Length: 406
Image (tube, rainbow, N blue to C red; front, side, top):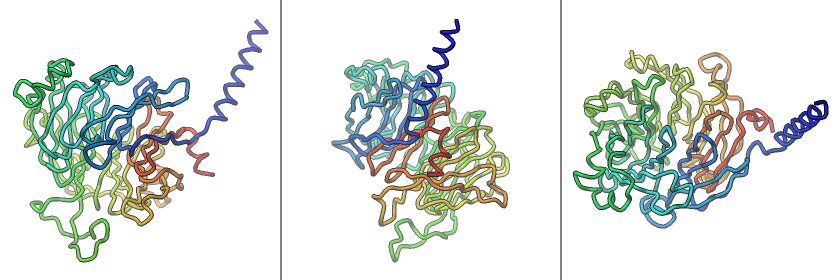
């Protein structure tokens, strides 16, 4: 027994040293510019969408395998339409991808094994709908899709999609008929110009989305210089956070918008605190992170005002980690002359937001144009897609402060 205890202690010490020697932050080269990233709940599989800026060669889904901490590319599945935002269903059996003029449903087992026909269903919102983001209700029954060009959120019955089976050939033949996936569209929620983010409230009663610019019908004042700072262009109004009644959206989508709240210049991404009390918004054209009280957004939207924290240039992704203690914002530099150079992530102490203390703790380096975050199920690892660097960045969350101090 004594020998066994000594052996176990030595093994534990070795594991501790090995963990300490693992890089806290590294990048994996990808075969194209990545947009979204999602990770299976067992963390063995990582899926990255490669967006080529349009349709054609280079677009696809890269599948990576995590085996004993070593991440390697297993394969890349080409797509005709450029993919963007993605989501996995709760049991990881489907990967759902927004892809410009369609939403594509993949069988994850086929993606992992390399079997043929991993895509088994397609829903079209029409040519160049601009489908860019997706999210699924917690019960896996309803899918929401943000369509940038159509200025709507499409609501899809996932149970209907499942009822059509996974015969790729048969589903493709009936895709645009009343017997195919088109029949799963419940309706569309009218929002604002260029909706993107889709985030549920903690109790799933509400769905929050963004609109980069408020439409003329809202008659909001034109206060902001347009992005890109092109001389002679007229000013634009603020964008919005839009609150949607999720239950109503499944029955009467057109009437499900509860409120529209001004949210700075070009709000593009959202992150909810673990307790659901705060909604964080990246305002790209304001170079800021906004923090809203979610209760105010829902119950008193006319008075809802965000706390504004300056960050870096053109922030896009945002994530909350360490049980809500820290927020990270990716500064994309999208409209800067140095847009192709390495960028930064701003790290914030969320407990300081709304106090006299500066919440910004500092910045850590990342690739060019950070675009999407994903936190693993256990909250230990953060994945980040760097669009212009064509890399996937892997960050050990427990060692964020160590990276920050370098």
